[in-house]
Amino acid sequence: MFCKNCGSNISDEAVFCPHCGAQAGEAKGEPNKQTDNAAKPQTSNVVGLVGFILAMVSVLFWIIGLLASSILFIVSLMLGISAIVCSAIGMKSSAKSNGQYRGLSIGGLVVGIVVVAISVILFIIGLAALSAMF
Ligand SMILES: [Zn+2]
Image (cartoon, rainbow, N blue to C red; front, top):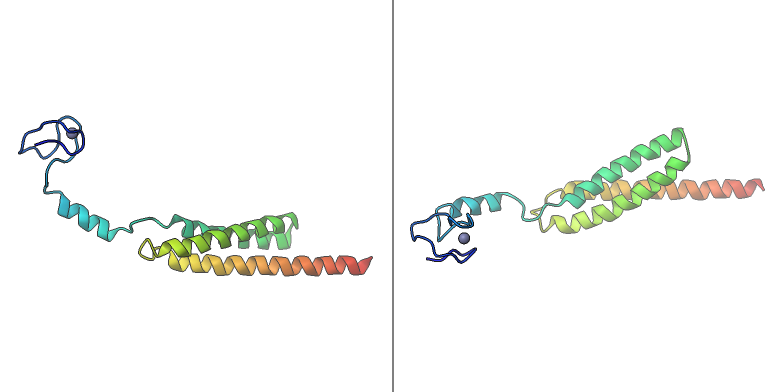
């Protein structure tokens, strides 16, 4: 028979192609591989996880910003927006990866929206307070 990978003429009994190492014929390893694929998600939903982590980091920066420096507020706002975007993408792609990180994506989305909303409200209040002073 011929190797499916490189096309070399190989022995009919060969399990692996001696030329390229690819699996030859309808080998015995196949059923194992299929169960492996079924157990694992088809695509890993890393974006959803990243969105959740970004949301958590934005909360951290928000708290530090509240205590220390208003510049960190802006960092927190940026992280919050990134968290919303990543979590939204993560929620979509979680359907393709057997619901992996779906809960985390929703959590990241909610936390991201709350952080951004509070930051925007505080920013508007700050601006209003500033303009009232002058
Ligand atoms: Zn080959």
